Length: 200
Image 1 (spheres, rainbow, N blue to C red):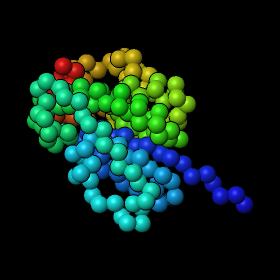
Image 2: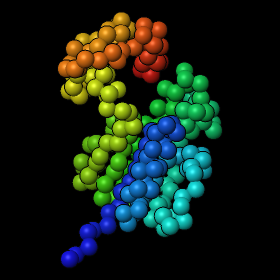
Image 3: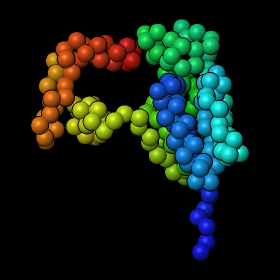
Image 4: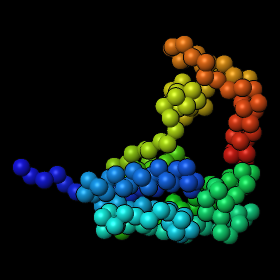
């Protein structure tokens, strides 16, 4: 019987350690299957990763893409943990600036798959144009995804009927089973404030 093809998989998480570490764990699991991994982040984040187990080190390549300079973003801030929450939008602007270097990496490295996070809105068309398969790895639990949106289509089109913090203090109408999962008003207000800062 022929042995399955070994793949080259590129993983590219958002610049928060709550995303980086789960992506890194996923990279190790994929490498254990014999596949080649390119784990992509910024230089400082790469330096802060846990040590790669010696048996997996030959299969995991750590790829550093320097974060572009952005006004109001401190020079050595490369993760959300390096910043107060009100400065995270500047980190997202810098992250968008990785589009060109990431495209160059894809053209020179030709991975079979890319596993991406929520923040690379520019990546699906690039992957499609290059003929590279793309997968989304969401670190949120299924309950939180179902709570935040009635459907991905409604979320993408901005058709979610909830527009006020109070709307998030009740069970969403699309949850078909008994539940008590909802935000308290102060939690919903904090969430809305974060979204407002995020869109600035």
